[in-house]
Length: 635
Image (tube, rainbow, N blue to C red; front, side):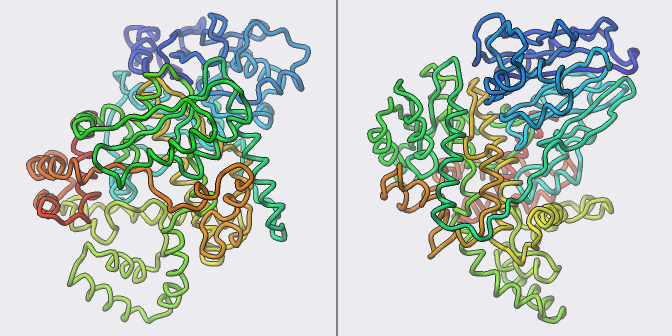
């Protein structure tokens, strides 16, 4: 796990002070991603530079220093992440090579020299890397199949630049930070910016499972090296499916134990993290450090008891931390320092505290249980949507004027009501399920926006993102989102929540403490398998995540598998409700005036309602609290 940076200059007159100084500046702001070492390399022409900050995981010696050069070809790499099957690659494809380090970085260099772009079919891991091809005078960039490792890029003023975090690009004086209004509009719905956009014009997220070629004329190509393909499992038996799921997860955990430093785990005591810990124990007799957090005097948010029980079953060295109200208030004041790319998701905040706990115990690498709730339909909300879907489809056949009357009638009573949002979707011919649309309802956005912002012709509905995901699902499954509704929720949950929320937050909040997080459920084999399984095996007899739980009966107690699910949340309303509502109320008008995007009086009204006890406003007010802090920090 590291931070990587790079600059490719097409017009030297645009860059002053030397490329080396700019690379050092980028490395400085990414020091948290790699506190153990740092370095940079510049080609002889002085037009291309690569840089890295290193968190030493494999081969802790100086042999793992980056950027790393292949002496035979002259190629140079800057690499962030882990190639979990690098030893297999060395044994199968690189038997004639002499290795000078024990790193997967060296494996990537030699694999590229031998196989060029065919290298990607052999990789199993989480990675973002850049390789300078000396002979071709081209820069190759790539990001792993699920986008576990972040990568951003921009081409401005005759310079191409990339970085593991936006703040790396912000260290370059010529990079402009101009708000992308459509991205801001979408952020209000999803609490994040849908890919490939960022909140800034001309700065982009690198697509997962893709590679890019850059030469002295700019970006030559950007294309996928991996496409998610559906397996034909329509007639699979329950027993066979359970075996496949278990064996795939077992292998994934085994790969993710590869490390030259101790590997720990985040343990909530729920199904997913407990399964990971159980399989870790199968792979080692050494001590396993597990970590969990609770919140003082907030039993509804605590799983400490359940985590402790699982720890005892699998003989881990267990660590707990009780978070206090002052801890939370201190963090939210500075939350935008961590999130240069905005993500207003309060459920992510506990990752910060549990990562801090792990790092204080000297742990650099942790496994987590992210992913299976989306892949296997584990949310209770999925069941509710599934029950609603047939009724919603029936309502779509109503005449348009009836739908319109329904929307106006509900809106007359309460435009913040979820029923108003459903009526609005129905009237506008939009689907029932929008993955991750848990923030400000599309039907209520116009109330919050300034007249100037509402009238921009180039701003389109945030439903366009859902439409794009629906098209991807249909290409993957051969069915529409209405024909296989549970399959659609799982697929879009993976593409949206797993990639854009969970992997983002585990990377960013973990790396704030120099922690590498690994997610066994989100390896490419498990993703392809889970999304190919019939929906009838994901939800059965009212049991969510059915086939996963059946597969884990061989290693986990019944009480762990089938107890009521708790979310990994925090008491934001109980501890910080007054803080965020007071802040938003006091700053709403100045924020609206400074940005010209919002109606300050409406925002003040929402904050006042939350202060008065309207708890349903918590997420909306938090969104504006975060957004105000983020604008102050980064603009």
